[in-house]
Amino acid sequence: MQNRRDFIVNFAIGAAGFAIAPRIAFGQSDPWTTEYPKVLARIKPPKFPKRDFSILKYGAKADGKTLATDAIAKAIAAANKAGGGRVIVPAGEFLTGAIHLKSNVNLHVAKGATLKFTTDTKAYPNVFSRWEGMELMNFSPFIYAYEQRNIAVTGEGTLDGQADNIHWWPWKGNTRDGWVQGAPRQHGDRDQLHKMMAVPVPVTERVFGEGHYLRPQFIQPYKCKNILIEGVTILRSPMWEVHPVLCENVTVRRIRVETHGPNNDGCNPESCKDVLIDECYFDTGDDCIAIKSGRNEDGRRLNTPSENIIIRNCIMKEGHGGITLGSEISGGVRNVFAIGNKLDSPDLWTALRVKNNASRGGVLENIFLKDTTVGTVSRSVIEVDFNYEEGAKGGHTPVVRNYVVENLTCLTPNMAVDLQGLDNAPIYDVKLINCDFGTVKKPSIIKNVKNLKLQRVKVAGKQVTELT
Image (cartoon, rainbow, N blue to C red):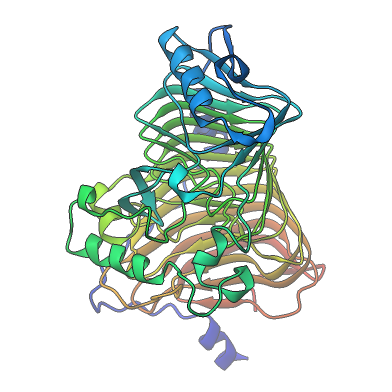
């Protein structure tokens, strides 16, 4: 028994190129009563003048075949010029290319309306964007805004990206997503972008888009403030669904994401501040929610963490991770509050997940997860993994500290926790309070963790003082 414990609990701390993170003590004050209300009070959705601009007035046709791109752009320009209002997509099917929002405009997709995004790649001209945490010029996201204020996408309608095993998804390079030998795929462009970032090549010279194979995101506000994404259903995205970057004051509320393509993450706030993800439904082909802050050199150059993030009352089904931090997390993340979330699917890998390594680095701290209900997961309930992808290969210290899980229940997980720090970069200060992991199939893995605390933790109905 002692040998097994020594194997799975390793507190060794080395010094081979890593700076050792100082411990953060668990304070006496409760962040849920001190900090959480302050963050929530700052997040306020934008309001819009009571003016409506129907895209029908500007020439759009509800036949699902005629491109409405110009009509939508004209309606957005008119609303913006008038001082703001709603651009109405009425009931019916409308085909469009890239939509670029302007300040004070709410794109309202009404009940019974479907915006179908064309599979013609030429309909998405290059814009300044981020792709897997790296800056570049690439295909415009389907709905995009740059340096705008007071913008929204709302309504009870549907946004259909029309991606499938013929369009967009094969570029991932997986046969299950439609790729066949000899067909184009993203590998070469992805490697080239990595090299450009490392040199570094100026972002304006990192030109991809048409003739290249880096898939666009669905909704991406970039360097925007006061954002609302509410009510819409999102289907069949090329890759990430809702991806605010370098934004402030973001509300994502009651959206429904159902898409199982490659890298089809549900909501990925990246280097954002004051974000609320509230009452959403995620059934995805990758992480349901993944908080990010840039990859490697770009993340460290911009040095902008994601901070003050609230995730509450969401339902998460299929996906890789439910509430995830990483892996493009080099700018760090702090002050995350998740409460009242429900996760359940045999095809959900992990409920609460952290992905980092010595190539990414970054400080991830003050993560508070409370009142979480988990049905089943295929791997572990909680995973903090520094061995992700490159693992220990790199000179940057991955840091996780002050990660607190309180009031968690799970029925039938494969494993309770999988916590894997590195020999020279342990995970610090993980606290599990009042957690019931149900009946597990496999023992937990705990390697290189410093100051793991258990309070009222049960496995298979029995209270335990350590996880083995």
